[in-house]
Length: 334
Image 1 (cartoon, rainbow, N blue to C red):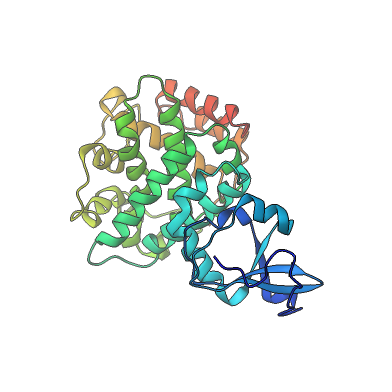
Image 2 (image 1 turned 90 degrees about the vertical axis):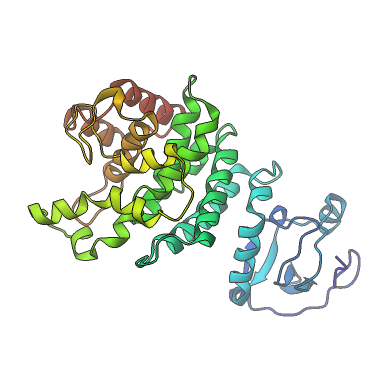
């Protein structure tokens, strides 16, 4: 990158309107990459053009020191271009130890939420398309890599949305499911990706259920309840053209089975329910209880776990329930 403003040169003031710019972490600009947005420095009460869009970035440590660089600035009208750049390079950003884990967590959740929203907004009459499926696969891989680092669940918990939407709920459930499975010593590491993908897709069947039913403030009628109960099977129909393996399929299909055999769609019980579905069942319920829904207020983590233990007896694998409490406690969420 050939900066417009070189260290030691007199700045050329471009603008003084602070509301036209937003700050970004300098370490999110990766050397050797290209972005379709301009980079600015804040100098002398205004903003100075540092690099034009389309240039190859090269922000070296010595250059940062010489510029006393604590933030770059980007024009508000180029926010989408910056977010697209982040989405393309998020894997490298998440694994960059020079970026504070809180900032990496915020970026992961912000960008992943956008991907999930695109996947879940509106109806999917032709099923899940290849492009969306590949984006979801990439999202899960990033989540696996990021959550393997110490302290990331604690940091991510600050950003997990507590306003219920199907897409944010699915992302939250994916994060918790991966964290749970990573904590189990006897789990084959090869299933983590497949289970994470299943968790990300577990509620996609709800895109075929009328919003009036999903968002109903009062109790559902028996007929409405029967419609809602079809969403795991509908999810598999939406994903029918994608090459899901048996772990992902089982995670999606059986996440509403109960330990006592009173769940759906198959009425399976105990260890006959696949492990990944038993884990997702816990994470699914916990996130729903701690989220603001049309028909219920969000509970704090302690109360949600108490409800799961006392009012939902027989729903969950008791040993996995203890593991969830351990994972949340270890992450200082409860």
